[in-house]
Length: 106
Figure 1 (cartoon, helix red, strand yellow):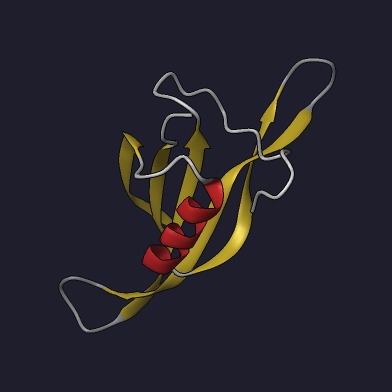
Figure 2 (cartoon, one colour):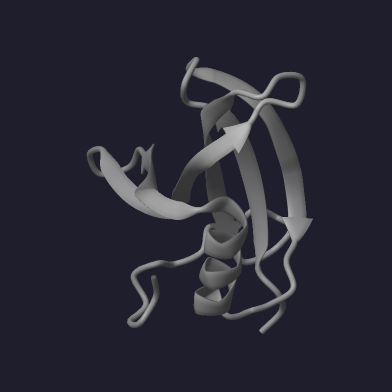
């Protein structure tokens, strides 16, 4: 199996505004649990699952990643804000969604 791919969206949750996106990139691993541990270490505690909807036979909701959250300092002042990082996981550069329904996945 090749390495997993992710896309990150950065949000200032204190002011409810987007602050950036990573774009799609290949990670260091093909192991979803190792990826989760690294992301948690980098971005803080998991706040929620990242859910998305898709149409087909009725509306379906699926887990596509995680939302991590922690306090960070603004770059220009010594005040903190709540930063969220929304991480969406793919199996390849063609944006094939990762199947979180497989047993043992975070």
